[in-house]
Length: 286
Ligand SMILES: [Zn+2]
Ligand SMILES: [Zn+2]
Image 1 (spheres, rainbow, N blue to C red):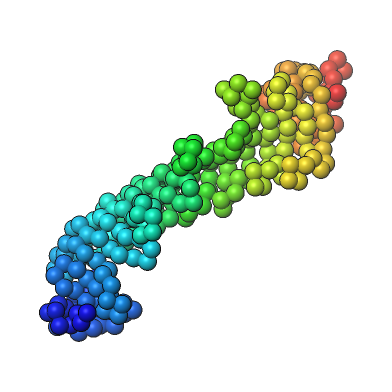
Image 2 (cartoon, rainbow, N blue to C red):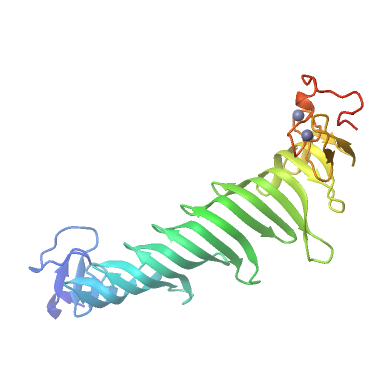
């Protein structure tokens, strides 16, 4: 096909319309005929749709590597509502808002068997969003993204486990781990602390799944207890403020392993220095 003979115009890109038909440089030489733009080199259609003053404007289709964009354009750029459809599977891979040629605003994205529903900024997931496994329709994640990765508060579901906490560069770093009870009704807390790849890793505290009492405090490496202390259920009175502390309501301190008082913050670390020791009270040790 000899496009030059069709009476169209040569453009250096879709955005710059050259009235004289001269090529202005740029990678893709584009040839426009009627409401269709072609890649001059490959002769393939790159755009079909509405124009205004020589620029893509209004509704149109852009033909890209592997997918087609169908949606709105403003002054040559994808802007407004649009859909990306995979050429091979003929299914959509993105549906949502665009700005300045990029995914921006609210949108839905399908990739690797998962559906993301949430916010985008300058082409990437940024802001709050939810992820579902497409096959099972189950919620896998809800929380915050920044530049395409999980960052900030988030909740993650795997099989019968549920994690909530803080994500950094896509990884859960600190938070809580729960498991579903036998009736699949409630999530029960079993661990609070540091994580790596959704495994207990770093400083953490384990709880008895049935009673909720602290059973272990220490350092973990990929779910294995490395250094710490096993804890048996007990209750006592805080030596400073005399309020009750127990292994159900209070977490131990990582330095001294004594329970930390929720009211005044006392633990064994300040015990020796304290002049408020009452002979009738006990420390927190078992
Ligand atoms: Zn206290
Ligand atoms: Zn302490």
